Image (cartoon, rainbow, N blue to C red; front, side, top):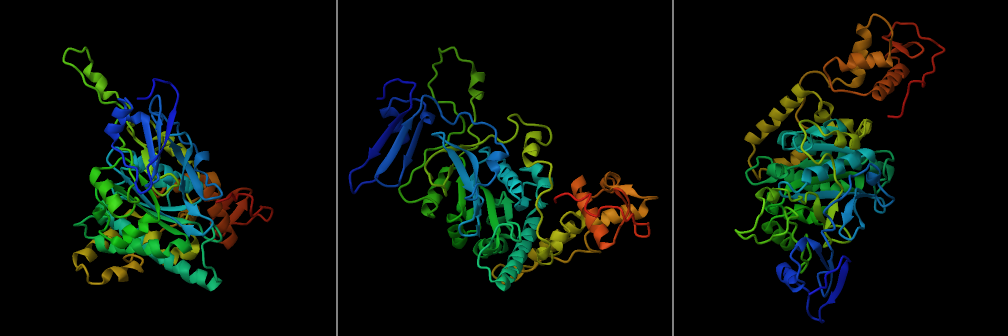
Length: 502
């Protein structure tokens, strides 16, 4: 039994040669006379050695809010996502600059474990670091609603997820051909292309047994994991922590994810057995269970004066996890707090502030054709609905094992109906043609925002006006004023005056 103390006690343990350390948490707590198991942290190396740390109280009971500075990549391509039980920073890699490899991500968590908030943090980090994010939130967009205007492509249905995966495969092939012509064997961040991450939230809905898209989606994710790394295309899945069979039933897919960035929030017992069986955890490694709340178990006599309402006031453990791919896979950590503590009626202003007001990074123009109509029409609801209906119709006639998944992998989605997608440049041109006289950038922005299309920011309008003027599609009609072709251009206007960094 340990003496009562307010100090941290650390025990270094080693088993005899030929044996490995295993432990039973209730028995360990009993031996140390500790009634609150959340005060104990146990780390093992899967072999003979272990460190048992006993704290005066749960060291992860409180964590501070995340900051934008936390989410700026360091020279190793890592961001700080939280802290371990011993106070050291917990980091997750977004990119490997040493090998030029895009990463593969897997995030597991039961309902209420903090999976959506953790995903929000990673998406905000991608925006902060200029990474192009394509996201399919298969909870009808409810998991991460604040992400909609902060990623390059936001979908909410399995069909949109399929279109994004197909477009991602097209981008991967285009980049492979282009890089091969350049003699390049690895991806160089931002030279010339941005990193692209394709993420599927609630991936179980796409990959579980019975899903009509299971076979093709598994094929596409596997191919992106194999071929996308060297051309800057990463893929990530967020899923319920129930059973790995819900992730496509693919041994190849699971093998791919073993080498990715794997984060395990609160799990189920069947999930833990599968992690060990599938090699995502080394044999012999044990993880301390993550409780649902921090309320220690205690016996209450019928004669005790206890307020039953207090039982519902215990602090939750949302965001507590293990980063299995990190240097300390058996060390419990907790993610920084993301967003408001209490539920809100609408979008969370703290999360929106974390994303920032700037526009998200966009796919490079060189890959637009490869991304296809699905990418060009991603903001056009009618066109996207038609393409999703075409994807659904394909699956109705699809026979599993018929070989269509490999063919679809390199397509770019169903043809979009009607004319090409209306870009910001099209909307600006329409505004200037309808105007009775020259307009300033602010006036153009107001008119564009009133046309019912996707909201844009002033900087984007100014950049588009400068580009259109340089191409002769609009006219500089005075200092800071623009008009449709036919107006008199002011030769004193500085062509670059209204340009701002994109």
